[in-house]
Amino acid sequence: MKTEIRLPLGLPEFEILKQSIRNQKIILDVRTTALPVHCPLCGFSHVKSHDQRLRRVRDLDALDKPLYLMIHVRRYRCLNCGEVFQRVSSLCAAPQASDPSSA
Ligand SMILES: [Zn+2]
Image 1 (cartoon, protein in one colour):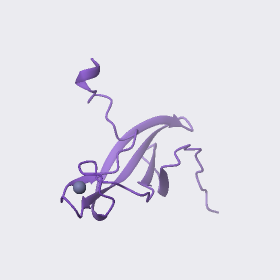
Image 2: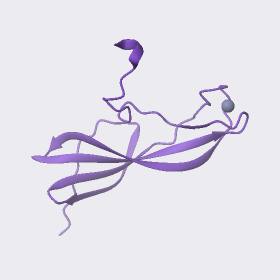
Image 3: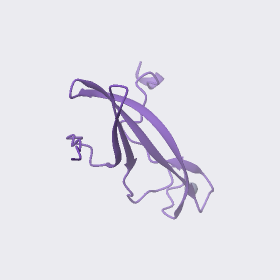
């Protein structure tokens, strides 16, 4: 019998790749869904997949266990100016790295 965790993520920008429980922690491997991207520098829409970074984010507890998101963040390269950038998600923004202009 296979037990599958189904968590209401409520994060339409992510797709779940893998769910597992390790050391009393729930680990969710998620990936940003492929959406049209534009270069943040020049606005050019012709971009090429560059590479992928893994980012761990602590989420709310689920099922009385700490929940971690392993976010596979895709990075892109602009075919116009060569800028490498990533799809920025609200979840990827580290709370510590707050915008100094808002302080
Ligand atoms: Zn560009």
